[in-house]
Structure formats: C-alpha cells, structure tokens
Image: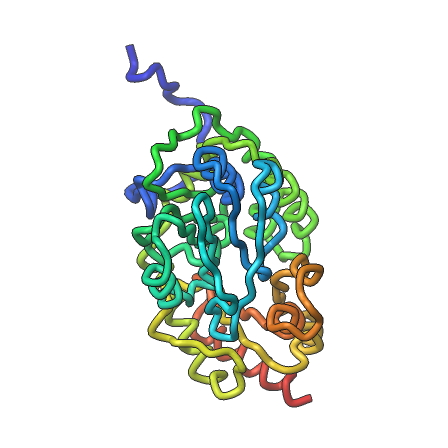
Length: 327
C-alpha cells in the first residue's frame, strides 16, 4: 500500500519550492492571530486584560466573546506605555510590538512586570523572536502572500486545534490577481477575504497556508525588509517626528513616517499609486482628538519596505514623498 494512501499522479498542484520549515516550528498554528488570542483567553480565563488604545477592534472581539473585562492604556511617541499600571491577580497586559521596532520596550516591560502576565502581540513583528513571557502572537498574513494564518507561542499547555480551516481556497483570488495584474483589480476580493476571517472559533491553520509558508526564504525576506527600512530612515529621519532606534528592528512591517499633514500627503501619494495603510481608525472612538494615538491615525505614513521591493524602489518612494511633502 502506498504510504498514508496518498494519491500519486494526476494533474499538478501550484508549483512551490520545498526545503524550509515554519519560522516558528514549535508554535501552535491557527487560522488567524485573533483566533490564537481567543484560544489563549479560553484557556487562561483572565479577570481583566489591559489593552492599548492604539489597536485594531478585531483584537477586542476575542475579549468580548470570552467575557473578559478590558482596561485601556495610552502610549508615548516612542511607543512606551504612558499610564501607570498595576497588574493584580488574574490580570494580564497585552503590548503590541508596533511595526516590528519595539523590542527594547518589550524588554523594559519584562523587567517591570511579571513576565507571565504579559502577552506580546507580534502581528506587526513577525521576525521578532518570542520572549520568555506568557504568550506571543503572530500574523504571517501581514508579511507574506498567504490566505490565512496565525501563530501562538506560549508556556501554557494549549493543544493544537483538531479542526482545520478549510476555507483558504476561497481567500486566494486577491493573491492571484495581485500576482497576475494590478492591485486595484483584487482589492474587493481582499476585503472579502479579510471579512471572512472575523470568525474567531479556534481552528488550525489551513494546509495551503502552511505549505506556502514552508516555501518562504525567511533570511532573505528579513534582510530585505531591514535594508529597505534603513535606506528610508537614512533619508527621512530628520523629518520624522517619531523616535526610532534603527538598531531595534527585526524584519519590520513598514517604515513609520510621522509628518504634520500626513493625511493629505497620503491622499496625494495614493494618486501616484503609492498605497498607504491607515492604522487604526477603530481607536478614534477610544481617545481624545489631540492624543498621540489620534495623531498617529491622522498623520502616520506607513511606507512599504517589504521584500517585494529593491533599493532603487526605496529611492523612488523617498523622492515621491519629499516631492509631495514640499507642495
């Protein structure tokens, strides 16, 4: 009998290279970061979790579903925590490693609090290694062309979900359209795919996503992101209002450029087909109009620095940003 009764022959699958393993091979694998967070909450059953004001609403859904009390805290311009927090029995604190540039802040939190009361959200910091805290959450979908996926690294004895996400095929059209043409063609499909991941029942990562992630050249991707980030920072640091330590980056998500009038600049860049995300409109209902968080929503310009782009493309981005900034 053939091994595992696996089919042989027939038509070909999508061609992907072999040879790599997952970047975090021992991590629990989920269909999304938020479902990984939900699984953690169901197991730990905290009384309260401290969350940053500056976070996507999708990470609050698991807390609501698990009936966990939420308290919010603010951050400074270096992304350190602004509020004085005391973690009582049964309370946890979640900190976001914003854009993959906040490793030093995490180290300070590990010294200030009991590490087993800390959850580090690395959805924007895929290449930042997990620390000796309660748990670290990852979202590979923000770094690679995959239809779903989330990782959970934790000391807790949580089992890998037995039920696998089988909807990944229905979330691939935007990936294929982006590969074969212009991003505008697949944007509607992208939004539909994101909407489908709002379900937080913990399921295992799809076989398709797992297979794609095992084909990624991670060392090359990490180096490209860091090199591109540095090239942007060298040219824009004197105009950037954010405090950034270039020595504290690890395969960053984007280059966070904070300029006065950033909202208008983003609109002008969009006309040049330089698409800039906004993080996170959701948080505006939680903060005052002149808070640091609200200014980030309005004026932060997250510039692409990912593995798809060359050094020459970074030069083009810098030139375009400076040209628009001077208008």
